[in-house]
Length: 429
Image (cartoon, rainbow, N blue to C red; front, side, top):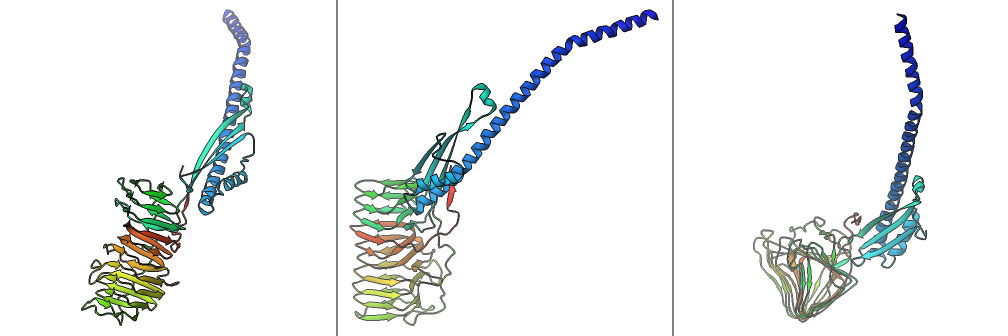
């Protein structure tokens, strides 16, 4: 028994000596582990600081690019100043020597790209002689078109080839507005050739389509792709005119349609209402349209000769009868002076011609016809322009558009149809 106790005491003594010898090793291991944890924590903190600073700079760049894009659209030439202002307001000082700012306007004036590189100070990385970390952020803001508000001519079709077509020797000068082509046709959405000469504020086409200028044709500016189409700003916005009231001047009735022909050679006054079977104004007759809505149902609206058509507060609506697709055609020819203006209020404010979307025959604006004011709206048909035309302050919103012939066309654009959506400023990148 005594020997067992002795051996046990001896074993405990040896264990104490071994533990005493290993305390130094444990201390080294624990110290190394704590150092590693401290370094790892420092690295995490530095990375977190850099990421947070990067996030704040990205927010500033996003805000600045959106504001600059809006400025570029609404006040050309101010985009850079607005970008710098918004960067400063959001904590990025373009004058700081540790910050590099690059601002570019892309694709004309509808997009603004901002890139910022900044040196972010570090803490624990300094132990490795890394005093700062460079980060670069970028954003592209885009100001989308204001409905049809920026465009004098809008081709609505999303698929038609030659949706905007111009050839021959036409010279088109648009003052104060541009052209927009929605089509995604690659061959080609906009096709301009021959000796066509087009000048406008812009000639835009949807970037899924393509534009071709060939032969001796010239445009100023060159066609430019944009990232969005222009939705029909009048779709669903206009109530269909009533067919309940027949004009007292109509030669036809709903039951027995007949073309109404005006060819007296003198002065004639017409009253609003439905003209069943069409309305034809010929010769040198001077026609005064009393205010109201003129519905041409189931027949053509034609003007020929050298007379005039005048009126204030007038809209002409083309539709079918008896079915909505049984439409006639609008044909305006000759040297006739057109001097009528749309209503300034009400359901049809600013609309001069509206061709039912079921009416697909070309809207023909030919000859030396002059002087319509307001919106020409033909969502289902081509607007066909030919002749030496001095257009009034108009805006054309059509399915497709064709401009041909040996023509000189001057168009004084008025933005009757403006913004149709608030979601007009966006980040594209």
